[in-house]
Length: 353
Image (cartoon, rainbow, N blue to C red; front, side, top):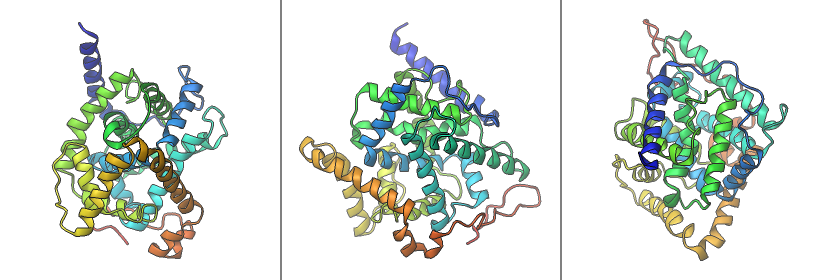
């Protein structure tokens, strides 16, 4: 048996383990506080550096990844039920928090128990466990499973491996192994068992598993999305406009569908949408690909995106202009969860505003 065949078989088996077996196993409620024995500090640090050297392109990939995750019904159900990202303002708060946590993982030392990275991981793990408990009590059934966690991992790593050229991400195979190691470690600390951890295995195995997930889970999900998907996506992208003011939902979704090999569901009708789509394509295909242009535009776009994220975290002036001064105040549980139907299932009704 050739090495390629062995790799393909391993990827197929891992895919089946995640999507079939993992759907019946909840996220671990007790998480490890120490890094695993296989942890490599130098490789982890290299993964962090790889992220920052491609900040703009990876940010775009991760935004697409968040959209893909919304095509998973079990994940979407929880987000709809908790009602904390169903309209632009709550989506801004939720996904800005997601970005803040992600940046802490990429920036700080994960080996120290009281580092900002470890504290952040603990907070996110607690939120996952809380969502699992609430969903079970609400009658949604088993939610936040090992499968859900692994598919969410894809949102942060999958397109980096599969669409590296199309997104104009620069780096070597060792850089790819490094960022895989980074997300394997983060997944481990978040309670993903290694057999379900998307990032366990060789680079070729992980890439192969990601390809199967994109082909058999996310591309079909984009083609025939679950109910409430479009509302949640529109809220997500509208909520991200304070960070990326020129973001257009129709244009970005067209770019997402084409990148993932799914037919575009909504044509680019308006001139603005067509223009923004062309800008998105031109940025990745030319500005970040042509060596002479990339020499100037890659650091410029990286800095611009990092500054925009920093500004929205520290002083969200753009968000205040869009959503009002409430963005300066952290109000706990401002939006209630959806009410329940008589049989205990979540009522898929209009989100409370």
